[in-house]
Length: 230
Image (cartoon, rainbow, N blue to C red; front, side):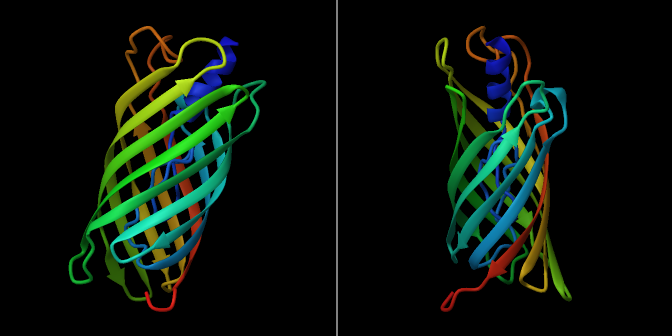
């Protein structure tokens, strides 16, 4: 049971979407919407835990994103599996909404605020993640394609409800950063890394055994569709 709780807790620590939108699909970085523009985006994502605290998870998922001039919404689903003997795949769900604070065509600096929720169930253990982020990026147009590097510090709230034992809620700081690239205005590639500092717990909850600070890498492809009137 101790190993089972450890697997579920470490997997659920991580949040995220891929491509130019934000979410919190467990095992994948938290991405931001720099460079997306308006319309609909369909994305496929891969995430990989890089350190022992992440349990070397493998994530595969897909999302749909609606980008509007002043805000965007996203919904996605994925499968995440820790690289731990006996661990099974779990299904993660996520959704979020973001507001474009600065997003003008003549200004390369883009700023957005976003909040989301991610849910993961592994057996009878449940986890809810709520990342609240402020994203800052640059949109650098070049002939035939565009590149948008970005960084997004955040407050990450996590609630873990184990099948056995008491529930635990923590609020910690996290950070993600990466690059979104768009080719020909339609196809996109995205890369990102994500880190959350969950450590020095108070002796209760799933992380009481020691420091757990997962580091995750993410990559994926996307296709964007322009909607009439946007």
